[in-house]
Amino acid sequence: MGIAEKWKTLIFRPHSSQPITKVKSSLKTSLLPFFSARSLAIGHQYSSLGTQPILCGSIPGLVPKQLRFCRNYVEIMPSVAEGVKIGIQECQHQFRGRRWNCTTVNDSLAIFGPVLDKATRESAFVHAIASAGVAFAVTRSCAEGSATICGCDTRHKGSPGEGWKWGGCSEDVEFGSMVSREFADARENRPDARSAMNRHNNEAGRTSIIELMHLKCKCHGLSGSCEVKTCWWSQPDFRVIGDYLKDKYDSASEMVVEKHRESRGWVETLRPKYNFFKAPTEKDLVYYENSPNFCEPNPETGSFGTRDRICNVTSHGIDGCDLLCCGRGHNTRTEKRKEKCHCIFHWCCYVRCQECIRVYDVHTCK
Image 1 (spheres, helix red, strand yellow):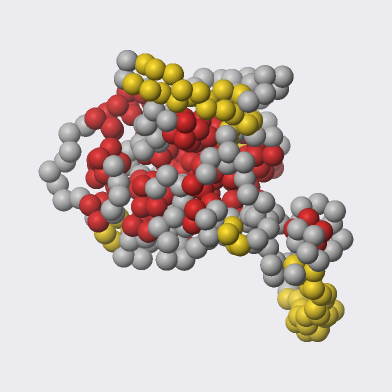
Image 2 (cartoon, rainbow, N blue to C red; image 1 turned 90 degrees about the vertical axis):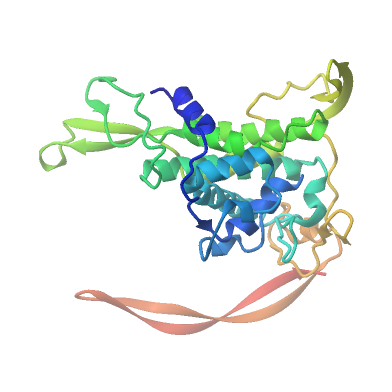
């Protein structure tokens, strides 16, 4: 059965009369705001994934299509939530030295607060990285055999070339992308500019994985002679995807909103703001509203400001004290840290270290 036929079977099969398998509890907090709010986010308890089981019906805010999906294919829902989790963690890594650093807000449905309410570069990146995370986690889970409804990509057959052959488990990224598309895009069905932007950036995130797929090979033969290699398609480390999408964030295309009338009513679409720039492709991120500067706290924009943030006094980039502190200057304090030092390897087989106290200068924004 081909991938398209397999997916139709999964999506449209009748609902089972058997009891619904219980899902992990933090799906309630990690999926609700991510998929029910206009801002793509997850609940602040995403790090405790999998403590108590709940039913899909206990996750408030799901649209009917998402609820139906959850009930029928509950075994892959933990992977969906895990994908959201790794997407947010990667966002926090990529923006760790910037004025907006993916700060999360406890006790809030929209974990980033109102930051993502605007159609900014930051919103574009979060949608892309989270949608990529869902596709990535589902694909990896299928390859590991964690779900019965999916598995390896079996389309690679026959001998592809001299000296190697297909083997192992090629990861079925098309299936993972379809799960992300069906679930994460379920709310983006309105004829407005924000839905168009979110759909585009969601797809750009998923496309990044396909772009970065690569062959992994294992040697076979006497004493590792590598007479024959078996190879399979593999996703890259998620950090590679994060780096790729961060580059797309830096070069994101600014758009403008156009309204035109269709048979269904008024529809908003996006077009490039500057005609002399290359039009964005499906791989590029798009936005149409300017970002705040995030220098000062502002509850309306969700900015926490940069006061007391640690800055790099030797850097001339955005993580440097000049730019990160927005020209306000910085404070310096000394900090003592215990570290292992003077380590000696003893035969055989252990390492013995001393403990040293070292003093560091810590610079924080005024």
